[in-house]
Amino acid sequence: MYKDITTHSQRDTDRKPRILENETNGVKFTVHKHIYYGDEWLLTCRELGVENRTLNTEDMEEAKEKAIIEMIQLLGMAINKYQKAIADINWHLKENRIWDI
Image (cartoon, rainbow, N blue to C red):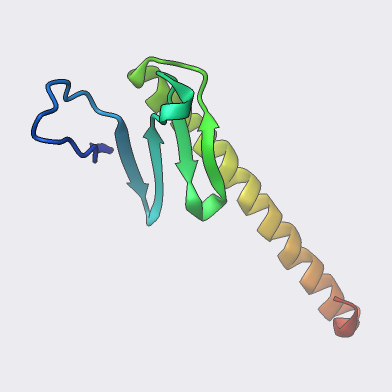
């Protein structure tokens, strides 16, 4: 699922992954490190408006697992938000109050 997209210079002797990308059904997110966060792993999903969310671990495998769990929660919240918006629109249509939206 994850793909290492870390770029390395030719002189880099340490070739450890620092940026891992995952794409599921068109939704991309990355598990990555950032200079301001030291060895801590972060989650970014621009589609959901998430930037540099800390995963509270320095272990890459644990970060990958935590990111999956976090993405499931974030996607669930997004789905819930849109389902509520659809229900609200349907209510306004049913009540013939389309201009109150």
